[in-house]
Image (cartoon, rainbow, N blue to C red; front, side, top):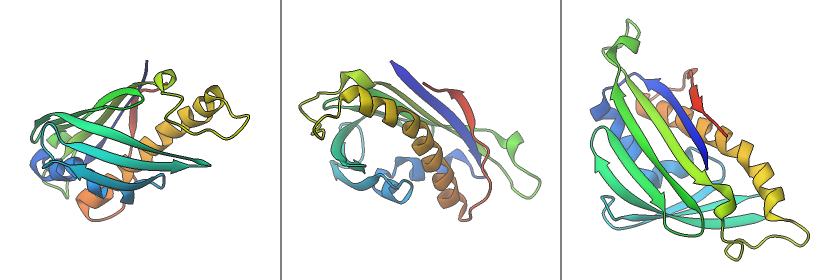
Length: 173
């Protein structure tokens, strides 16, 4: 299993941060490869988000199910089709990280655990002469950069302005 665990600080309270983390339908604004998100349910536990991704000559819809929500601290999810993957968005109060001109801060964690070789080969239409190993070798480093981009843009949305965001990479494939 591979794991991506990264975090950054947003200059807002967990109560202000969590609605942004929870709003999966806004995520296409945060990454170039996520084209569309549709929700089946009310966004709570049991809701399924259809995440339509496109990269290179590949397109795929991942179905992500919300498995636990504990506002304003945690939202857990898992993919329910084709790939063994699960993860969590976690928000922790970290007021000591706030600069002098901000009242408080929160640390936002993105944690994803996945097995790239668990992909159902029949669910992904690969071009002729392209193997799953070739795709995994190219997608694996992109996953980390995509996670970084999502977190950076998420912070800009939360705070209302872009700023240099320091990312802490705790674990990566």
